[in-house]
Length: 48
Image (cartoon, rainbow, N blue to C red):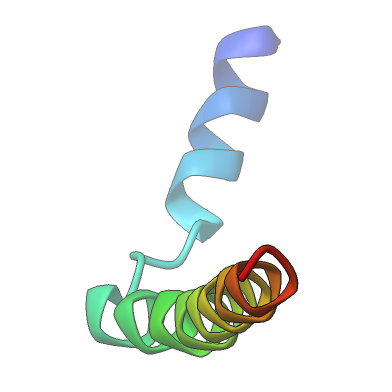
């Protein structure tokens, strides 16, 4: 019974779209990097 459930789940799983995943990571990393860099620039102004 468990093997049949595992086969059903694996056959219904869609393949990962690597391009969409890459776009998503760019969507996440670019604003994150901008925020970190902006914070560091503001911090250096504080200590000068």
